[in-house]
View 1 (cartoon, rainbow, N blue to C red):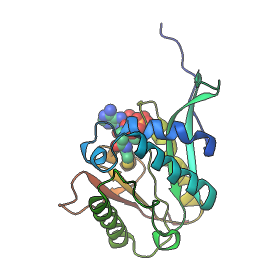
View 2: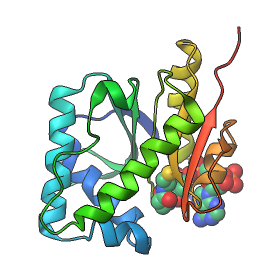
View 3: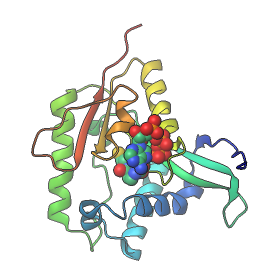
View 4: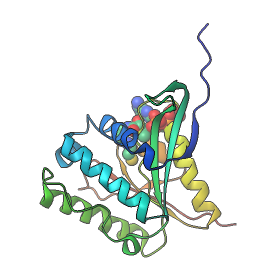
Length: 202
Ligand SMILES: CC(C)(COP(=O)(O)OP(=O)(O)OC[C@H]1O[C@@H](n2cnc3c(N)ncnc32)[C@H](O)[C@@H]1OP(=O)(O)O)[C@@H](O)C(=O)NCCC(=O)NCCS
């Protein structure tokens, strides 16, 4: 008989988790050629992404970082290992301003600007000017971590009477569909899925 695994746990992430968040992101997207072209896995890009997270932890209290930890495995500090993370933003892009710090020098800046302008335009196209959470939830294992992160955002949206939006990947789309998100991408959007979930009516 196989051993019983302790259930994963979802909890707020903090700036102390930035290295783990980076590791998860670069692992989760390692095989995504488009994402690796924009954000190659180099020390410079890892440093830039860490700076972006640090900036948001410090300056954007309306963004909620969540982590999913595995109580059965420990990191170098003896803490439960982070196996997935997500980030929900409760404000609009217009309120928050640019999503990232200025691009790192190893980033193809023009291409990045084009992709993220396209994402914001899609968000406006499918959502209008409503308050929205947006999520990003990479994970390395099919153990329910992604579902826990998406459920957190849906519960938040329902509690506050908000519709929700995610810039998902086509690969990740089935995860969001399980929670009522619909892919509203245009045919020429490639691997990116612009997904919305209507606000629930009481
Ligand atoms: C997509 C991803 C976030 C899912 O995370 P996860 O922790 O494995 O998610 P869960 O265990 O909760 O699985 C939820 C659903 O995702 C889908 N899914 C997860 N892993 C899958 C796989 N290897 N193949 C096909 N579907 C998969 C399934 O629909 C699954 O539901 P099911 O198990 O009831 O069929 C994760 O595989 C990932 O990070 N992938 C690479 C990066 C990425 O594309 N992230 C999404 C950004 S929007």
